[in-house]
View (cartoon, helix red, strand yellow):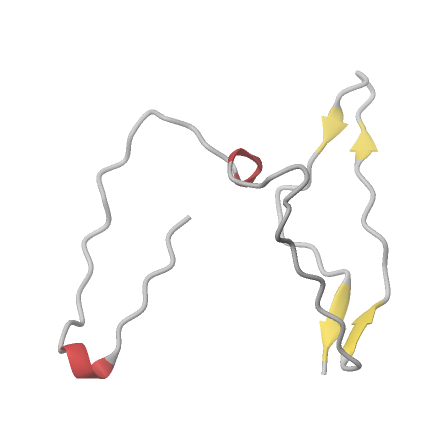
Length: 75
């Protein structure tokens, strides 16, 4: 995943993406199981209306969705 941002005062407006590699990584590679400095955001304008649950396939493996999911809204 790449997040690229430019501030107008720097004068830079182009970015060259790194060349594709064979290395496969996922978000799970970066997340911690029990972070000691985690923060919980509590806001009145966040509404969670659906619980996300992973499902098993017919073969007993975990099915991960290959699309964005929405479980709530902000404002």
